[in-house]
Image (cartoon, rainbow, N blue to C red; front, side, top):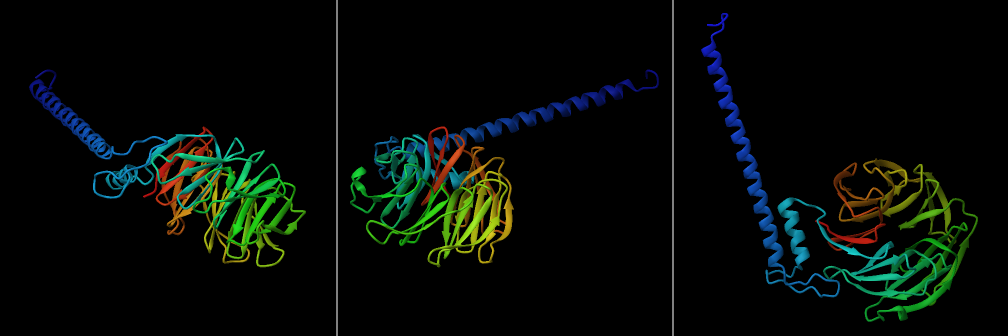
Length: 381
């Protein structure tokens, strides 16, 4: 005993504590090694899968061939399916392609069209891996600000004051000779179509024009003037046309009337409404105020149902497919919501290569374009 303290007991306790600590350290080291082994195994599994699918040459000019691994999947779709199942990934990145900035993306079948900052329109084959640039459509002399597909026609609206009509039917020329008509119009900022009979174009002059696209060339039906506030986006749902305004409003048109008439203007956001997407009963609006809002368009005027405020920067693009809402923003993020839930539930958020300006969904893939002059292709599970 020293000063009433049992030194032997204290030393024994210290030795026991030291032994316990050593055992804990050994257990942690074993756990770290186990995790390292699992990581190595997953990496080997990934490499093995990719190597087994190496029958496809990944270059912009190659054609995807069927791998010898049984299904008709390309390597990318097989990789996508495996990644979705093995890692529960929901947006596996398949490709990053260097390209001129694509301001607008729109798809028709397996073909993707994008408006380039060179005033041309890029045409991509989405069935190949990675998607090669097939050709470009030239002729506009200023930025192409809107692309609309209706039937077997592509309509391109430009700041050069024209709308060009392109033949995109099967067997059409794969070059600028696909041009059918050039319509003298107004400086185009936004366009949309109602089925295959009418095209709507908007100019910052404060005019909207309505075109009969069942005629060849399309015939001007109406010019509606004196519209206040710049229009950044347009979408049609049923007999309503919705236009997103720079002042944060959404203008609602009754297009069953001739000429179309404004029936409501909704104070929707506090900044530019640059993206709209719609189903038969819901409207989704994305804004520079960083919010995505959900509207019940079966009511008059449209009723606000939900505000999705996960974004931390301006929302520039929206897309809908299979019960999912996709948004692209200037924070360089793609966010996904489950629209079958009430309110829509956030599912995933993945970083893109740069500030997003456009997105489009084709089959089981999503294409995004960013200000760093890249187009990325994502698998959609």
